[in-house]
Image 1: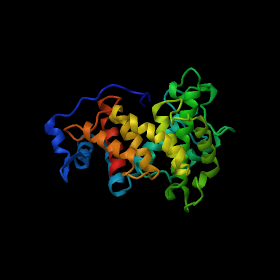
Image 2 (image 1 turned 135 degrees about the vertical axis):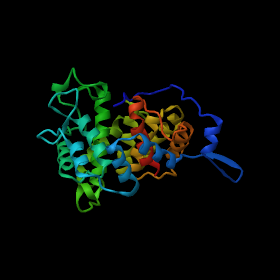
Image 3 (image 1 turned 45 degrees about the vertical axis):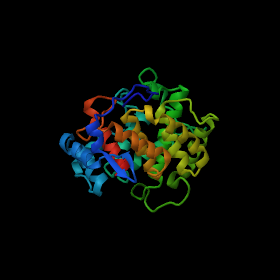
Image 4 (image 1 turned 180 degrees about the vertical axis):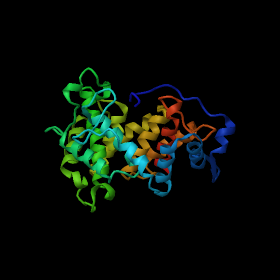
Amino acid sequence: MCRFSFLNQAVGQLSLANRLKRTRISAGTVSPVVDLDAAIGFVVAHGDAVDRARLSWLRVGAPPQQAILEDAEVGQAHDGGWPAIWGGEMASVDATCFRLAELDDLGALGRPAARRALDWLATRQRPDGTWEEDQSLSGWAPPWATPGDPEATLYLTANAGFWLTVAGHDARAAGPFDHRVGGVYAGVVQGAAHAFAAAVHADGTWPSFLATGWLGAAVLYRQEMYYESARIQVVLTERVRDMTPSDVTAMASALRRVGLSTDDTLLAAARRRLAETQRSDGGWASDDGDAFNVHTTLAAIRAFR
């Protein structure tokens, strides 16, 4: 997982030739576009079996092979969560959210393993609507999951609230569709939304990591707290031009997952940023090194397919 932070490194511009390959000419204007065909080709060429299974699900809803699903679910703790690689056998809120993201890309949120994890996540919410890792993980947890750290608490609250929001409105995960705001986990998600909104500053900024902003904005948007979500989106829009492809793809795919339109100002800015940073091989560079370039590219496909 990347260390979500406010990044200000400049991303090298593409060569003129590569930029021209991804432009659309209309009414005398030139607008960069994301080349999804090239992105798909990059995943096919460089991804493994799981990556290609994720691609098939995202493109046409093709279910993965059983063995791939079982591998994605391996290691689940008896209580329903998944442990982190840094935390021994104790289930982790952060690790469980990460695993749910992988399962979502395989269309597996409705399987028993994910359902157990979601129920466990809901029971881990604290009375004030927030989430925090177990105190036994102190000293092991990374900055974004450190027990007792306010920035980590807000990030985990946005992350857990996001996945309970997604699953609460996903017929595969929740069974018969639940029309309440928040779906199956309505009360839990509402508590998360209000806890998060209370931490956001008047200018729309938030006292935590960059990813906390877009995850929280997604939760607020799906809770129909549109004004509160819009304040955060304005701040994110201003920061898009300095974001790395990893951040942009993660942000765009999260907001699209809760139904934000691709015509929205923030997502339009994200699409432009991705068009500017897409490489000539069709993929995008990951903050975590070349081994994760396929993951970043899949996130872009999820957002703008």
